[in-house]
Amino acid sequence: MPDSLSTRLLIASLAIWLGMGGVLTADKQVAVKPGDHLLSLNLRHRVETQAESGRFHTVVRHEKWSGASVAVIVCDMWDLHHCLNATRRGAEMAPRMNEVLTTARERGATIIHAPSSCMDAYADHPARHRAQQMPRAKNIPAEIGQWCHSIPSEAQGKYPIDQSDGGEDDDPQEHQQWAAELAVRSRNPRAPWKSQTDLLEIHTTDYISDDGEEIWSVLEHHDIQNVILIGVHTNMCVLGRPFGLRQLAKNGKNVVLMRDMTDTMYNPSRAPYVSHFTGTDLIVEHIEKWICPTVTSNQLLGGPAFRFKNDRRPHLIVITAEQEYQTHRTLPEFCGTHLGKKFQVSYVFANEDDRNDLPGIEQLESADMALISVRRRVLPQSQLDLLRKFVESGKPIVGVRTASHAFSLRSEAPPDGYVAWEHFDRDVLGGNYTGHYGAGPHVSVKLAERAQGHEILDGVDVGKLLGRGSLYKAGPLTGSTTPLLVGSIPDQMAEPIAWTNESKYGGRVFYTSLGHPDDFSQPAFHRLLVNALHWAAGLPATEP
Image 1 (cartoon, rainbow, N blue to C red):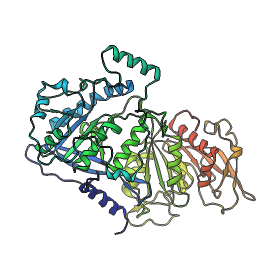
Image 2 (tube, rainbow, N blue to C red; image 1 turned 60 degrees about the vertical axis):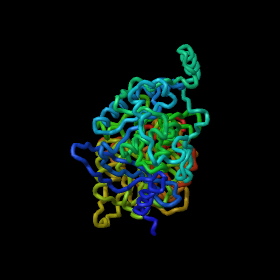
Image 3 (spheres, rainbow, N blue to C red; image 1 turned 135 degrees about the vertical axis):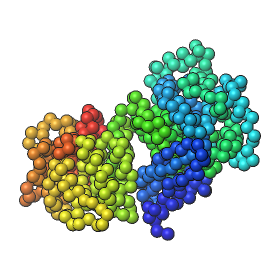
């Protein structure tokens, strides 16, 4: 069978029947009873661009679920936590989570509160009694009452963060003070939880349980196949508990994580040395690849998805679709090294089976800026419309090397059903690409006139910067540009190789014709690109 994108999507859709956490890829239709309510959801998951590539398309599938077929499980939203920052984030998230529960309940969903090790606090609660009195299901899966450390599909990937220290991200002095305060409250500083947070309402028609067999029996009694997990912490309890994502996925439930209603125990001083919020993103990505899809709370509530107040990272979409310069490899490596602290980074890769298709480009709808490395691709009208809408909104663009001829076919007519953007270079980047000189000599680099002191050049050792690829013919630039670097080769006119621009739509733009794989071996190029991305985002540049 050919290794096409459609085939890979089909394989992913069949994986759920093998208990590996795969997902259905076609729109799922449901039988609706009179008076039933529907949940309309967009399920996001990842599909490898081709076997063993290590690159993944971000794919969204639309499903409509009958409210009566849904359970929402609230995982370990405790009243207190040994990590003060975790306690704070839980309290910040809880009001929005309560809105999710209210809306889901109104639409007929079953709500299960699962604050582990806190059942004594609910000994007399009707919702606890309901769980205890539930008839035992006849199909209790083996080991459903146990913690699940992994499922077979996860063996295909690498776990993305180091959580061996427990993941606490408190300031050490503040953490010590918090532990002392917990002791004064007669709480165990290592396990201070006694109940679920009071910020979440528990109705008498809900269930309370932390027992895998009880919860499975509740699901079976109500004939529930669709389960939404919310709560904390994604990399620990949400994944591993007897009622967590792994157990439900491997035992055949159509389970999803509500990715904006969760948090992660991750300490940024541990690998991969990214921000706490990027650590959560990496765990969500791992889940979407190997365990189950995810959704967001605004699909029930409307408006924007939830975001923690301290998560101020601009969302950068990296679009790479070219074969000559391997930016599908070099840009993710660069971003992983330099951007994990200040940016939220997502990727769009070319369809390996159709060069003029960019699966996942819909991510632009939630993006703050884009980094483009595309060469001579034309797009379906719907995809080009998304790109145009993004650019015309005035959001920042950074272009690398072949971005100057990203959506042009040298004036050739596009294939039927596809559309070019012949003037992207002039309209957006401010350039005038007309080809390149032959490969061979390295490109010497120097400052452009009046470029001295520009913040993008801060810390860039221009004397140690060489262009390792052919010199692009980029001039003359538009009048809205500010040249920063020029390049030259023997016996030819110098050409601009890096500049800023204000696009015709008012957006901040940086472009460089550098970007050959060997350029990424140079610290000076890394610093240039780091500075440019910070400048485009309106952030102060930092050491790479």
